[in-house]
Length: 277
Picture (tube, rainbow, N blue to C red):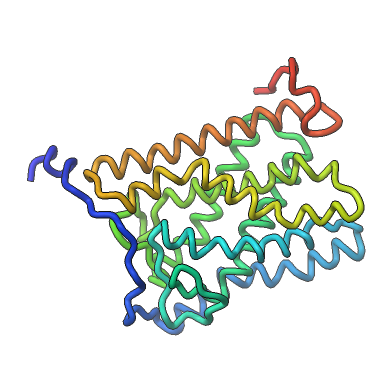
């Protein structure tokens, strides 16, 4: 097959049901459940300490938000071609005919809400444009480090011809998830100073709103590459387009964070205020 034939080879898109005989090694499944979900459980005592001893209600509210946000998982799995083994502990719930294992809700608590909260603390402390990009990169790499052991051991599988796989992990999920977590922190950074009294409860939906918005802005080319029939080269170009969109969203976020760094609140002095490099 010539190079041009390879590039133009038709790729068939479409979701597939989880094979009835797809089962993970029992030890692998249990270890990955503890690895991925254990962080979310471990953070609860810390959040309670922050609430009762420090008067900081944000971590506890973000935990509730992470649990709600986990309801997005089956939609993303359906569009993003992910299978969980039939024998993982669970299901916590079922959506799109997919069994979502117990590990997912606490995983969202830590890796979406708490990572977003960390990004918020970094932005609140003050970040330049470069600092926002470094924060985004660190978050994206956290997702890669967390997920790759699962795909390498087949604790779960990204099926089909996903672009740029390393040990079974499509790298696109690193930049897509990294951007979504950064935007969780960014939305919290924007609204938290204005929430008082019972309005503090509006912190709870921050994770689901920001994550959903992020995927709406950045993930559609990647989902097209998986679910549309198209030439092989088109699937790779669309996947790279998702990266370009992520970089654009991060740059926009960085401009606002850097502009508001010297201001009293995040959205003051945005007009006419120079952006630190």
